[in-house]
Length: 371
Image (cartoon, rainbow, N blue to C red; front, top):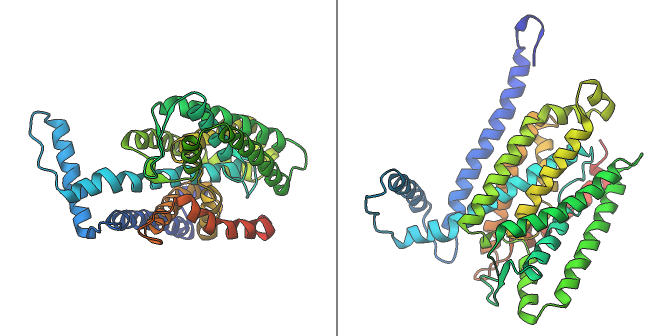
């Protein structure tokens, strides 16, 4: 942003500094929450021991990578708990929260619809149906009857591709509806309900012809749960989510222009249709990857952007990174609470996000969409 005479007003610098400090504070809070999340569970680990395990484990792995011939130090029980069980789950919660939140904020800007998110527009359920098709019909999942490991994806790439295809189908319907003159937030939400119902019916159809073990496994899998992500799946999700977040942040000025209206954006030189189509495809890809690995996790992509808007406003320069931070905080905090709220039982995180998100969604549906 340029100002006459090259001088930047002090008030504007203070305005920007507050937003930067809020985002940095959120990152710090997310790190502290990560330590707390890893420390709680059936076998409690003091937060200081968690911090030491993370630091020492990182140093040992970097040393082993740089010097493959050196013997690895003995792994303690604390390190096994931290690195093999809780750290992948906590990081999966952060990555999924970031991905769903940044996809939600992008959809809300692209469609100019404050109720847009992968869950409310039916894209998550479309991805869940695609993943179920891949797991049941194409045999990309190994079914187990144990609660701890209901479904193991032996071909995560094919599962993600199939889920992505069905996410694109739902995205195409949403884009077609968004082009209808006078399409309001209410119309978009009703379309999302119809799309969700259609793909939920498809998933139920597949479940009807599954055997008892498959039925129990698939029902359990459709509950969004970050604990089923392995290091391999976490790596795939991280690659896609980081790439999508960079893409959305790079288009922050385009989204600011679209927020002012399509005609205004076109007058500023923005190719609205291209930005809208590519953005929705990228959001669909993020949703497909998360759904195919973790199941359906609702309301994060809807609630987090609105929480951030209340604090730092609608400017996409701050709203996109702020929503990423808030998404990681919300889903990691929800997963931590879900693990201890009814201990020794562990709730899928989607159950808790639905309880938290439903009242907020009702509020936004009634009054929140009016600017």
